[in-house]
Length: 147
Image 1 (cartoon, rainbow, N blue to C red):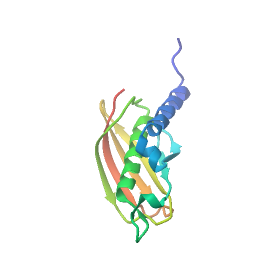
Image 2: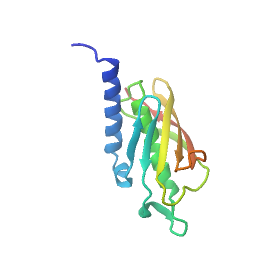
Image 3: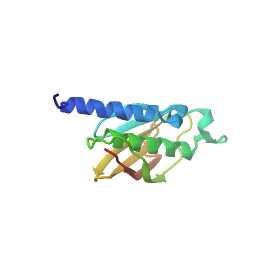
Image 4: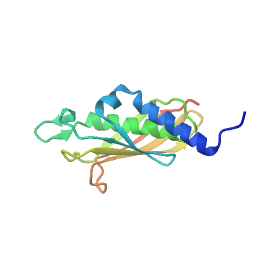
């Protein structure tokens, strides 16, 4: 039996990371979709929907929805990392909310896994709407990694 090629391993990691988001019920319910999935970064989008609004007067998406998006994106970034995680779970996730998201605009989260130890992966993320120069939120986190 031959060892898988680096390309085959990368494709396998991407398939596992995609399955990761597909099996999370709240990710499906919120309408999360992959935009980018690579070793360098993962990007997931979330459409603006009225039922996700936290304040009906302003039309701004609820902070908990943004938190769920960022957590999911960070987890997917861990799963796509070359370290080859079979599973992951959030140990710690710090989110700094910078400004309200613009009503009516989709939110995108971009995460990168920048360091992996034997059992912990470290991730950075940013959430943004159409104005990428002004983040909606940023996050740093630590995730378990099982190989």
